[in-house]
Length: 129
Image (cartoon, rainbow, N blue to C red; front, side, top):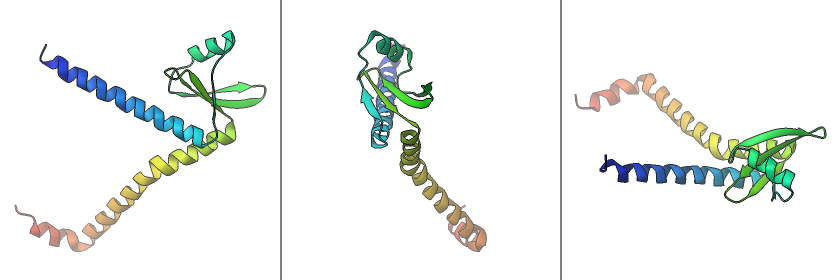
């Protein structure tokens, strides 16, 4: 068991680093979309802030408006935006995270089409059995 502790510690450290990087990305996208950073200062704000799960975007209805917020407990800030900022965040997220993956999918599909148009038998014959 003692032999596995260094590996376990390394795995935990890598997991935490990945989470921190993911949260930092999410925060930068939210700020780019126009979210405001707010520090809770009143007892009510602090209690509400502490009730929110850190790193997750939540939405609430307030005075007829939908607010989106992300709590970062490590920085003691709350990123807050409305519907237009959240829509902009989704556009940024799509452009930076999803769209690059779609380009790879398109490449894979084109490669599959080439393979299916007869090149598969030619290229397949070049692979040693």
